[in-house]
Length: 548
Figure 1 (cartoon, one colour):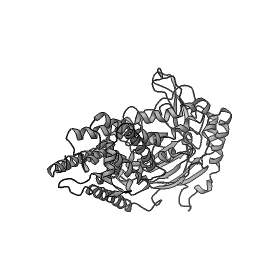
Figure 2: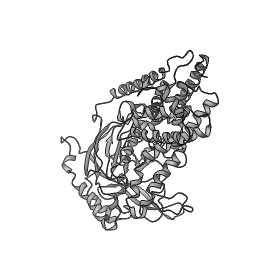
Figure 3: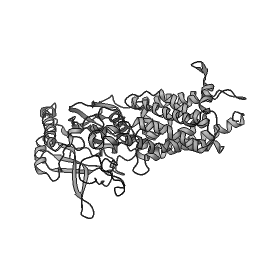
Figure 4: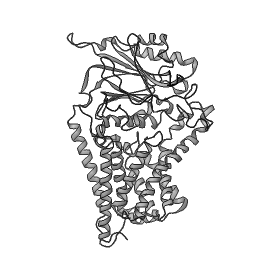
């Protein structure tokens, strides 16, 4: 097979022969190009170039150290380009924090790139150790396994940061992402890396008694077709989009679109608060009435985003009184707000909380955020690092006790998730207390009109598929929306828009899908099966004399 006047085997050989800065620079470039597959672009075909190129670069190394450096370079490009939007947060207060922006983006890339480096190290270690063949499908399968395991580790080590697993690139298709109901997003990553790396086998070139190496590409194609067909079959058992609603519940998602640079200015806080009140008070009460006199009026749930209220709602009676005016009779207002609560020693601690208020202004429920953002809500190693967090306030926030299910009278129980708590697979519901829906409130205003809010929305959307639960997401500047239990977006309010989004609450699935019940067990079985295939394929290659 030829490309631009020369064959793919020649291209593969040229890439494998690279050394030094040329090899490292190309690895970084491949990683950066791969981020074009992420939301909102979804330029998925670029992954074939990036991961096949990564395979060919690894083919040319016989050194474990070099293998790590190649993967680290690829990861540096992937994370630095994929997380470029982090810089926007530092320019909210450019005078104080702007100088940190390039160091933050590169620092994140340098640190997180260790995980792809571990993945490529494992692949070359397995090849040098004779566990897998150095041609054909075995090293493609090995890279898919190692990469996905590294992603899983990245999501769990220290505080965990499972942002932008490669599998999120399949979020453009409702059919393909149904695999997450079985394996979680990790299965999507395994499939994506395998298929994206499969074209590398076209560059293996002729060999003695060589079979068609392109069979790997055929297998990859068949797998994608099977997953897509299985997803369509699963969706065929669902009611039409928007046709499976929870009766008696009406949602009003308030997106005030307040610029992050203005959000915490003391002289504007009251104006922002009044803006939320005004938007909420514009909700037509008549729209909440039943169509017939025999049916009761639906319960209206007004939802504001993370830290929409700048006051401690639990302590500020005047704020609750004002907010009660924005709650339809019998309904609730769910809002993010800071909270001060004592710890086990009685010391007051700041918390990032969600409050549930009744139409009488009473606090019906509270949730404290569990997964805090490093440097945003607390400074790790504060005694060592001479830094302050980006979010204004005195001292660090303190974490809550973990995922909980809030059960309010008349409202289906829900699991509250604040900010990036919605990106953690298998960690969005309380163990043994399955809710009826997920509520993710966030403030992506830090990241402006960038890829960050799109990536965040799609990550949260995958949690709906994994858990078989509808997801309601409310963001200060967007993207706000409602996603059903199959991951289909039923309503949304775009980035940078102001308004109130009215939507019904979709029903949950009667039973959690396999991932929601068994967690990573199915994914672990899939990894083991994939490893066995790689070993068996390697033996066949050696038996046919296809591996030197």
